[in-house]
Length: 206
Image 1 (cartoon, rainbow, N blue to C red):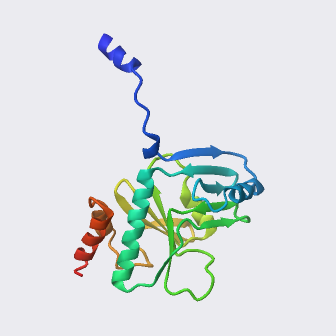
Image 2 (cartoon, helix red, strand yellow):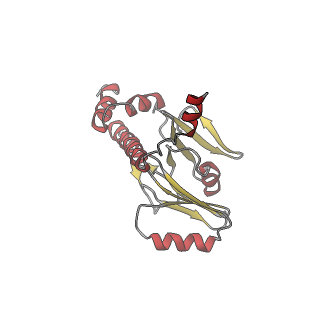
Image 3 (spheres, rainbow, N blue to C red):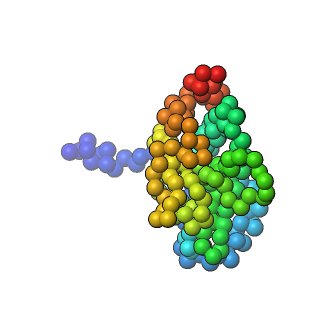
């Protein structure tokens, strides 16, 4: 009993801040205040802001989060290049709509095909869920009208396609229908980003 009590009273080590996404969330935030925060942040990459009907989340991604989203983005871009698919990347493009009271900044976002005019929305946005507990992004992207959201979480890549009743899980992306998510999952587990790209090339038989 004494040993059990001692363990309960012993403080656990706090997680390394570099390995955990840092979030601050506010309620009752007016759209104008959200806009002003975007202006104050300017061109800096952090914090990333998500806005949903008065709820505002500020997030500074951890080094692990950034490593995963960069690896995933590189794999998708490499896959497109090897497959002869025109792909335009827009990083953490700030998407916002005052009428819908929504704003988001994806980890990565892309348009498939050649650009014929200035884009208003990406074809798909990518979200890496590393530290749990953040604002649910799917309702945000639904109001913005983003056709697909790809979510990397717990070692799995999932596709969500927008329909009349919201997002539904899909086995494949309609924008890259030949892309097998299991292939990307295997490559994400490689020891380095360089080895991940090499594994993808070899798995494609190139």
